[in-house]
Amino acid sequence: MPDDSKYQLMNTTAVVTGSAQGLGLGTAAELARLGAHVILADLQDEKAQSAAEELRGQKLSVDAVAVDITDSGAVDAFFNRIAAERGTLDILVNNAGLGQDVCPIVELSDEHWNQVLNVTLTGTFHCCRAAGRIMERQESGTIVNVASINGQNPAALVAAYNVAKAGVISLTRTLAMELAAYGVRVNAVSPGPVYTDFNKRVMAQRCESLGIGESEMIDRVRQAVPLGRWGEPEDIAQGIAFLCSPAAGWITGEVLTVSGGLSGVSAAPPKRAKK
Ligand SMILES: NC(=O)c1ccc[n+]([C@@H]2O[C@H](COP(=O)([O-])OP(=O)(O)OC[C@H]3O[C@@H](n4cnc5c(N)ncnc54)[C@H](O)[C@@H]3O)[C@@H](O)[C@H]2O)c1
Image (cartoon, rainbow, N blue to C red):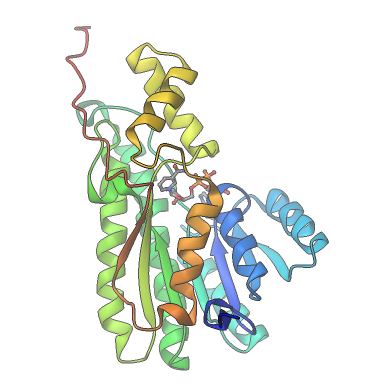
């Protein structure tokens, strides 16, 4: 029998942000299956509560708490409460993020730029800071930030999102150095395309700008992925779970790309029609 205990997360407390749906929910379920007590932290309280109910029905140990990661005071209070109630905070997965409406930089509004950066980068910073303080004090714990292949290789027409995810990668590497002396590991996972609500919205906008239908777009993306298929939430969840586990005990400051081999979408769009 192979010893797989080093992949288990027994007796740990984990927080996954943005876990009412999509990749966050898949990750929360995976960590719970591996033995963690998981707190689903999301803006969408009702959805998170019912997701937690469903996971508890599968005999998994989960709770749901309403948190807005853009509210730094609320984030600090949330993490302090979890650490006080549970004794330790062992795992944080910063998954919550906001996509950008497909739009060239020359037409991107201040408001939308700030909105995407505020949730995707600044929200992740708030959670890293609050959890980092606790983990530094404990001298234990691990953080995984969900970045994107767009953070490594920017795609046209989603500049704010690309920049936010590149920032998440830099934040990850910086925090990894700052917390290494305390035995706290910090890594990132860069997912490729998974057909969640988030991606459906972006794809619908790209279809419109390219004048193609949804099924053609789905097929184009599939063909661009070297492993020949879209990702599933479990693909991303398993990469994250590995980085959270003792099996990754000597890995910090890394970016694990989980994308079927796709490193980015670099096509330059044609000229737009004159208005
Ligand atoms: N789906 C993909 O193809 C893909 C690819 C690369 C990276 N990602 C990243 O993975 C993460 C999850 O993506 P997804 O596709 O599951 O997205 P999603 O939109 O389906 O889910 C995001 C979740 O985050 C929550 N959220 C948003 N703002 C929040 C806030 N201020 N505070 C707390 N929660 C908030 C939402 O309520 C939602 O439940 C995101 O960071 C995204 O950028 C996704």
